[in-house]
Image (cartoon, rainbow, N blue to C red; front, side):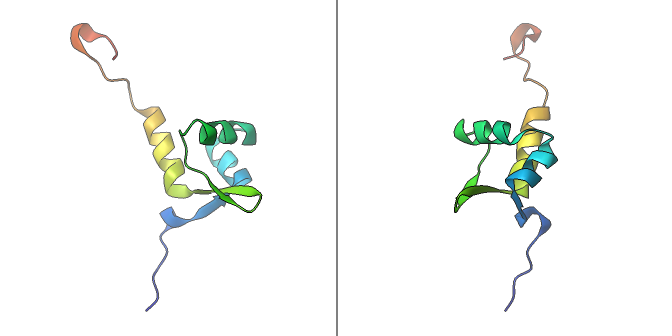
Amino acid sequence: MSRRISEEDTLLSTDEAAEFLRASRAKLYRLVKAGELPGYKVGATYVFYLRDLHSYVRRGTQPPAVGPAGRAS
C-alpha cells in the first residue's frame, strides 16, 4: 500500500524556505533557534516542512487580540 504525500508534507531546503518567506538564511536560523519555526537538521543543513512555513506566515499575519478598552493584549 503506497501513501500519497500531500503538498503540505513537502520538505524545503534552507534556500527554498528563505525564498518562500522572503527572508535571509540567517533569519531562518534565528527563527529556529528562538523556537518560532520548526527546522529539522539533516546532516549539516536544515530542512523545513511547507506546512510549518504556512503556519508561521498565518501566525504572523493575524491581527492582535483586542482586550478591554480596545487595547491590544
